[in-house]
Image (cartoon, rainbow, N blue to C red; front, side, top):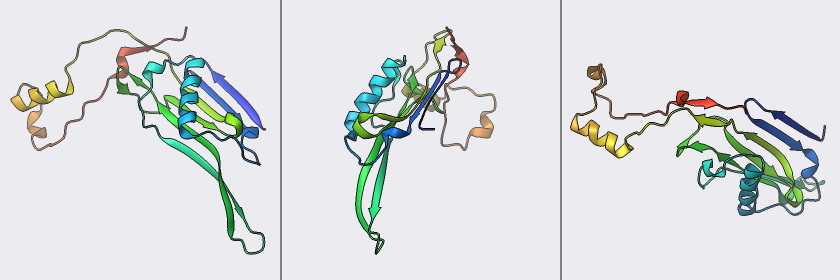
Length: 173
């Protein structure tokens, strides 16, 4: 199979693969900067909110094709045949961990060789005013943070605050 497209509307998944985009001879492979601009445009075109993209730097993907001498087996050439990146998603400046976001690779002449967009449409049920991380730290230092089981945590040097996703409802409009 050279190409496929998979759409799953409930969880908001789009997968696309085009094996013909990565062929020889290799030509017109994008730079990382061009790939980044084009990837953000794909997010927008596919219905994602570009304001929810985690800022740069973004993880990069680069594939190479290596050629060898038939007689001695020594390397005689290497060329980049695909470039891409992973763009993570954030909601209210909090990065969503897991698969939410876009993974995209471009082959010859800026053609998409693979794309996976996971973009569940989230709608806040309620908004709550929260303290900033610096304010929370100052409360802890001043003894204003209360924990019923504080004796068990007195020796801890690190506090981890986690985002509660239960305040978001999935919208499948």
